[in-house]
Length: 313
Image 1 (cartoon, rainbow, N blue to C red):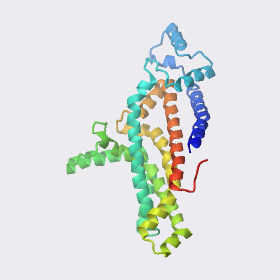
Image 2: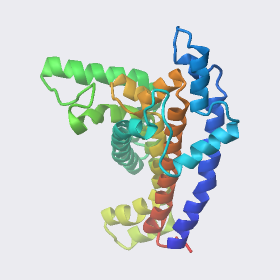
Image 3: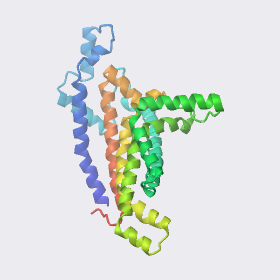
Image 4: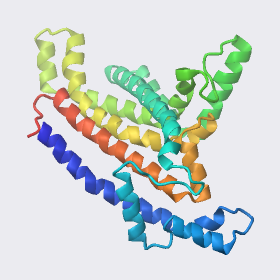
């Protein structure tokens, strides 16, 4: 197992280099001069502009700029903004908000997705199954922008004014963990729909397996058949999906953070793209790539826990 982890970490290095190089090239190929954009409508003095380009290495060839950036990343230096703020310091508080939002969304996705998928699979063909499938279709069809504002209106305004229930904050993070419940559900909406259908399909295929029929024929309790045999053997594709979805949730938090006024990395990324703060944009993507790689490694290690037949040499 130890050798497998080391091998996967070594394999992650070229993936990190390749992905960050591609995004680095894409960001720096955007039209416009980031130094001139700093002045807004006012024109920056050409001498000052030349000094800034030299200070931030914008005159160097692209490959030299990338080498300077990636060599700093490996020692924890993500560069600095044009205002002289270290990108790592800028990330400190904002990534905490985004991680809390993404983890909350992932927990809601796992609980609702697995629960409804299991419920639908056990009632295949009945009205409950059709109702769950209709609910997933609704989640996929409604854009995040619409569902966010609708839940804000219903839970934050109607529920509070008409019933006096003020449990679901709809803006900011002052209420602690409760602040992430509604935005977490909104962020996870589409993923919940996919997970429900994936759970339903995977579990129905497992329930038709010969060893499930054998366990039932031997008189094993239904709860044990479902929990120990059916559900456990259906979890591998579900864990794979959840592991990959963590990075997707973090990357897709831009709209959700804007709707619920969460000062996370999504809002920072949007502002940085508008201001051409290339160091911040590349830094955000680099961290997201690291999250993807770490999540995939954890998922691979969980395979051996879920299925004892899987061993890593």
